[in-house]
Length: 187
Image (tube, rainbow, N blue to C red):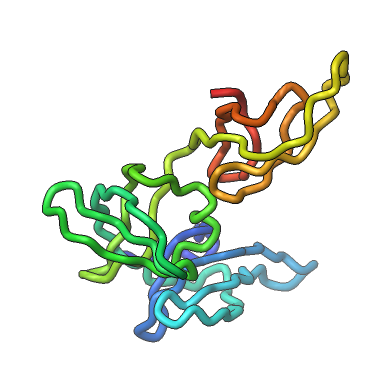
């Protein structure tokens, strides 16, 4: 197991504390006046989904969970579970929507992605930087609207709602950032 200093933690990392696995949801580095700095982190327990807050001194070290990644194909959703198939062995696994978090907004059937495993247990997925999704619902564009600051909401095929420019219409394929959830361009 590799140790990592508290100040080097990043959002999305998997850490091991007290024999449990946690995903870092939010973190904030605080340096109050003349006192010692600390890191405030919000964590989600991978196994039971519970949330917790931790306050670590800047010099504290945390055990970083070592993960194996396997290429898998997303098959389908059944209730709160998402099913994936190993592209080499054709074994199927499922991951709960709680463990996947916001990643479910970017999953399309037959998409190949990296699934993270801790031992034999699937704990999350690694999404590509961008995904191309089809616009299923948006208000019609206004003719002659040239103001660059104008945006309108658009619902995508996965249910994700993003702000898009006025020229984007229903049926268009658009590229969305998986980090920020923002519209990038037409695909």
